[in-house]
Image 1 (cartoon, rainbow, N blue to C red):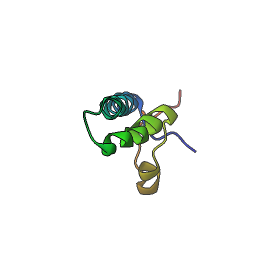
Image 2 (cartoon, helix red, strand yellow; image 1 turned 90 degrees about the vertical axis):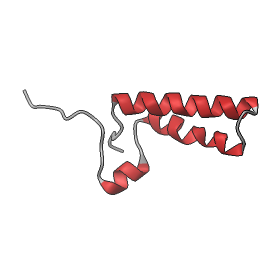
Image 3 (cartoon, rainbow, N blue to C red; image 1 turned 30 degrees about the vertical axis):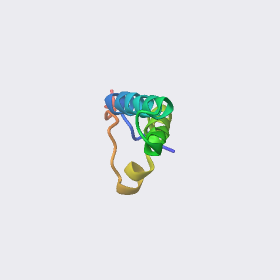
Image 4 (tube, rainbow, N blue to C red; image 1 turned 90 degrees about the horizontal axis):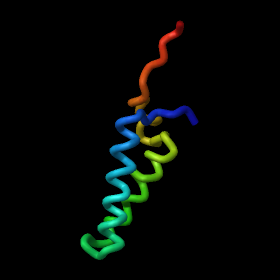
Length: 65
């Protein structure tokens, strides 16, 4: 697996995932809040299956020195 989720995208996914899981655990939102595990996992791993399928990446391009 080649990483395809960049720094800011990873942070946003982790934060959104944690917020959704927290809201679900506290009963503020319904069962769908448990779907926060998906952005949390993709942010933690740094790889997103839909990004890979469509050839999209938010990782910074490395320049050759």
